[in-house]
Length: 473
Ligand SMILES: [Zn+2]
Image 1: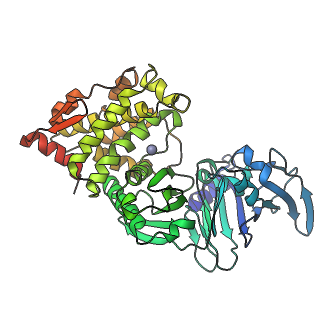
Image 2: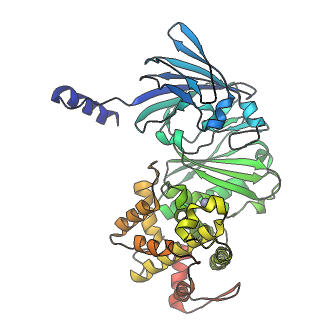
C-alpha cells in the first residue's frame, strides 16, 4: 500500500499527471481511567483535520463531555454538542483531546454501547473513537492504548506494532461497521485454528464459570468454520463472552468492523452442557466467511449461516449427523409458519419491521440446501456449496465493502464458472410462499410426515446426505 502510494506520487512528480492526494491520516492514544468510568483520548492529525469529529452514532455524542484543540503550545477549548465537536480551520499537526463519559453511557442501559461487567467494561468504538462525519475509504489511522496498571484491552483490529508500544491499524470498516472492544482485568485464551488464531475473552461473571466448556465450544465452532472456508478467513478472530442472567447462550453477533469479532451472550450460571455444542457458535462463525452484505439482503447471508449452523454442528461432532435433517425440517416448518404475503425480496428488506425473521432465514436456508444438493448431483460431487464458499471467503471475506446479494451471487457464479446461483436466486426472490422443498427431500431420501422425518437408507441418497454432513476432508 505504502509502496504503491510512493510510486504513484513519484509518477505524479515527474509525469505531470494529476496530483495524488495522500490519504487522510490520524492517530489516537486512548487512555481509560483506572475505574473505567471515563475514557480520555487524543487524536492527532497528520493530514488536514476534518471540520467535525463525532461518535459513530449520533445518540452517543451526548457522552463526549469535553474537548480541547491542541496546536503546539496553544490549547483551545472546544464545545461538544449534539453533532460532535467542530474544528474550524484545523491544520495538519493539530491534536484534539477529548473525554467520553463511559459510566453515563453504561447507565443509559444499551449494553451494545457500553456495559460495566464487574471489573470489566464492554465499550463500543462507536462511543469512544471520535471520527470525521464522512470516513474516507483511503485512510491511514492507528490507535495505541495507555492502560492503567493491571488493565488489558481487547480490540478486533490488526496489530501493527509489538510491545512495548503496540499499535493497532484502523481501516474504513473500523469506523463504519460494528465492532466491540473491552477493557478490564481479563486475559485472553488464544486458540490456534488452521489459518489463524482465535482469542477468547471471558468478561465479568463468565470468568467464574468452572472448566473450559466455553473455550472448547468456541474452538469447535471455529475449527468447523475454518474447514468449510479452507482456513480461518481472518488471521485473528476476537470472541467476547459477555455474561447475561440465566443459562445457555442467549444471543450472538458476528462483527466486521475493522477485523473479525464474535460477541456471545452467555448465561454465567450455565452448566457446561448448556454451552457445549450450542448452535449459536457455528452460526456466528459462518457469518465471518461470507462477505459483508446490505441488511436488506439478509435472506442470503442469514440463509447461508442458517443452513451451515446445523451442518457445521454435525461436522464438529456437536450433534449426530441425522439431527441435521431434523433441524432443517423443523426450521423449514417454522419458516413456512410466518410471512406477510410479500415476495422473499420484499420480506427480506422489510424484516426488521415485520419481524418475519423465520421466513427470511429459512427461505434462505432452503435456497442454500437446494443449491448445494443440485451442485453436488450435477457435478458428481466435484462441486458443492462448500467449495464455492471457500472461493468466496478467499476473495471477499476480508473486503469491507458492503455488497448486495446480486454482487455476491455474481461472484459465486464466477467462482463456479457458469450462471447457477443468480438465476436460482431470481426465481426464489419472487416467491410469495415458502419454497417447495419436496424435490430436494426426494433427492436426499428424506420422507416427511408432518413434523416427523425418516431417512431412506438406499446407498445413493445416503451417500449424498453423508457428503453434506461430513464435508470435505
Ligand atoms: Zn445470523
